[in-house]
Amino acid sequence: MPNASLISLDRVTLRRGGRVVLDGISLTFTEPRIGLIGNNGSGKSSLVRLLNGLLAADEGRVVVHGLDAREKAAELPRKVGFIFQNPDHQIIFPTVVEEIAFSLEQAGRTRREAAGEAKAALARFDRESWADRPVHALSEGEKQLLCIIAVLVMEPAVIVLDEPFSSLDLPTRRRLERLIAGLPQQVLMIAHELDAFDLYDRVVWLHEGRVRMDGPPVEVVSAYRDMVEAEAGG
Amino acid sequence: MISLYLAERTWLHGVPAGWKLLALALISLAVTPFDSLPLMAGLVAATLALYASLGRAAFAQVALLRPMWPLFAILIALHWWNGDILLGLVVSLRIVAMILIANAVTMTTRMDAMMDVIEPALRPLGWFGIPPRSVALAVAMMIRFVPLLFALWEALNESWRARTGKRGGWRLLAPFCIQTLRLSHHTAEALAARGGVFRGERR
Image (tube, rainbow over all chains, first blue to last red; front, side, top):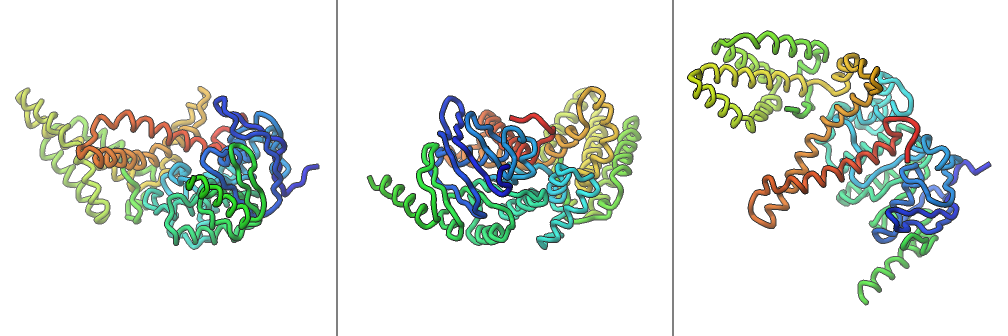
């Protein structure tokens, strides 16, 4: 019986377009806050996409909170909430309340229930006034918050964030970081803002499809920085 | 033709979507057989009065007619050529009124309310294996992405002008299509991440 509160990748290999993106990776995530760092193309985004069935491993096994990613791919989206880099790619509906209600309908609620619960969710975040707002009128930070609310209402066990701060200013980013810090879910985050991981439990550094280093944030982040500086200098 | 939903509530927001769509259908049927200039001018005036009653933000949306002036100019010119400039005016005014009335409905009706009305009409599609929910989703996404695509075009135009000093025009078409495909790829992925539209098989 697999542990219900853990993510495990066992000798996972992923190829895309003839290129090996992940090369026999084995990782077990039990910590509540995990960061993923590495250069572009190191395989970070592909790795997190294995966790909710957006990509399927060519070799090896992925288990997410008791669900085998291959056999139970259809159940993964409710277990693993995904926040993408650009909220504009993620928001599907013209108004805020519809966007949240869609998640709830995906989780099996009727349209009427979904609309009611969506408003309640906005109220929990003190954003009741947003309900009928057109999404294009929200700021980048507000859009990102909407994406998070829309994911949280599905009550996932894990939240994956793929470079969520890219288009945010510093105050908005800080607010979002505080919000993420307070979530009860297991969080797996990719970011290039390395100080965002200061309070995380663990950081994994991916390099060319392999784990280059894995450990406490301070050590891994500074080792990564050193490598980047050395390469830039040489 | 698709305009933006009006965030601030007006009295027209309170009218049920079904009534608004019915009124729209009846008005467009009713005005088609008439070619009277005073009648059409009256209809346009009444429509403008409707917009005025909805507040400043609504009235500002009359500007959506601006890109259509060339069309009206051509319409009127053609009728003038035919020796009936009056008819050209009537036709143009009718189009103006219908666009504005249709827009008044879309800017005061939430997408889900609209779909609740339209979905029963889509039900026969189910007989051909097309789920009405997917159609409803497609319509909602279209409304959502129109402003986004405008913004995308503007961004491309800006980067073109930043480097050439001229407007991009038709030359932006190819990059625009590529960017739109990229956007649709990202959105499809985000939709799949939330469980997709169809349950079951997924890569």
